[in-house]
Length: 309
Ligand code: FO1
Image: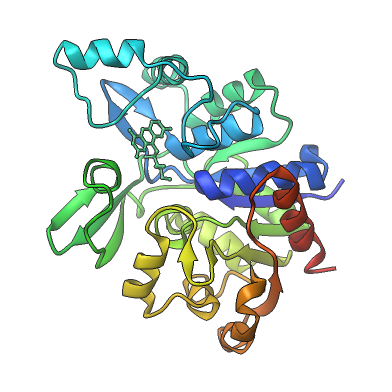
């Protein structure tokens, strides 16, 4: 059994993880999920990235929408909105069930990591899923139109504003959730999933104890670029990379992870970008990265698993 730690955001990361559990023994896998985009909606604690991972690994994700559950209905949320509740962030009926359980557990004083473990167990997930931190960590974006909490910018404003800066409220005080540093220290391979570096992976790296554990890692660290041909499959990663890193080529993706990666896997269509990745101190690996189905995701996972053999 190979001990692997994967750092992941929501949609793209979760899709990759479905491939990873096909390509390796999930019992050896620890996933560290982003909590910077957690949000309170209708009094409920929502952890969108942890939930995308739970639903993907539990086999119940809505693949087309990219978030939430398949076969979802919206009766309770529709009624809440009709009665004057906030309606900018949609919660499906099945999804609501999970948020009720999590919110009650947190209100009783249970740490996020403990309730996440119980939820993962309930979904029959073999891999270990840990939030980056049990502490409050929230992503903010500074834009020409003002500063916004992450979900207000992402969902309510449809990530239409350009981003000048990404900040993580609570980063100074946040400590790694139990098990995160130990998993990194005992890992044979560390993987950064094909997630948006700025809003999915940086909040994890913003937890000092995690960043330090990665910097002193014994295991190799392989990141997968979320861009294909300089474009994001979904979401604002390409626009953010252009504005915050000065371009969208794989070399710019590598700059986001300087000091924490040894290898960058990026799409075969950008093979000529290899020297730019090397300049950032990472070994370039060009391979097919489009995950059009679970088989393709597993193939990408195998590329990652063999990139350091
Ligand atoms: N994204 C949207 O664009 N609109 C929504 O109403 C919305 C609701 C939602 C509910 C639960 C959940 O787990 C995710 C949800 N998302 C929604 C997705 C989410 O905002 C983002 O995909 C992630 O935070 C970015 O990683």
